[in-house]
Amino acid sequence: MQKQVHIRLKPFSLRHRRLVEKGSLPDLSAQARRRLWITLREIDEPFYYSPPDNPGWNEQSSDIQEVEHLYARLLGTPKPESARYVGEVIEEIIQTGKVESALDVLECFLAWLDAERRDEAQTAINDVFRDYTCRWRMSDGQGLIVDDDFMEDIVLADTPPILALASFSGAKDEFQRARNELTEGNIRDAIFYAGASVESAFKAALGNSPKTGIDLTQAYANANLLEGLPKSKAQSLQKALMPTATLRNELAGHGHGSDTLEIPVEYGELAINLAAAVNTFVSRQHLKRVESKTLPKPQEKATEISPPTRPTWNDDVPF
Image (cartoon, rainbow, N blue to C red; front, top):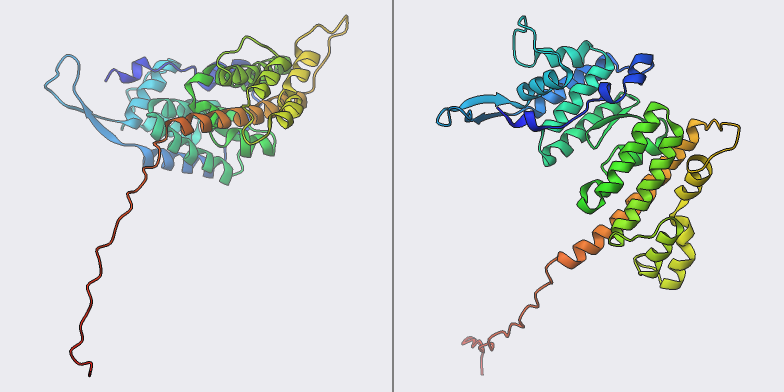
């Protein structure tokens, strides 16, 4: 089977080597691990394929089998010869392995699935994390630590509309970069990329506008893209649409003199929360506009004329 060879993925433990080496990652409870493995088995489906060197022959595989191959390839850990059954290696990792290795397996599993099944699987995995009050969530196929209610319930638990729009891919990538930088403890970079993500979202909504900063929100308002508001009211609200610019300019975008400014993590979280809210707002409005242009217009029904009613004669009526 060749499909998994073409999957490009940098699993959690490779993305966050420094964090893994520090050994400070919150673990998963035994109950959560058991349910995660049961969930993966429930999602697992078998399939048949023809090997490239023997197209007339059918081979059988499964999601778990391919994920086991994918994990072994990406992490450089070939399946031991002592393994007794398909999936034993990743089952052991999910059930008793290091938390970063379990996240690697979950990311490989989501990367293997097609888009529709991936969304369903990610929701099921996040349900496990929520039910057992784990500090982890999967978002866009990646494992992330959640530190406050907003990120847990709004930013990370569900896939924002922005992730589904091809034209917003730049904003999506920068937002993901911001979250990864925050996970790594690089607060200044997290703030910078959160601000860049918001700018990219506005540029995409405006059709790749060359403007930057506050000029972007002004152009957005002037283009009547604030759905449901008169232009005058939209123009007066434009400053509220670029809150990340202030954080980026003051904390991430410029030098700070002879003294290096140590930025508390809360400001990185604030920047990402704000970016998530604005990006979701802009992408939802954009999606509404796209859908309104593509939805079929309702067909007017022809007025049906009922045939004339024939009189009913009752022979029992006396005259």
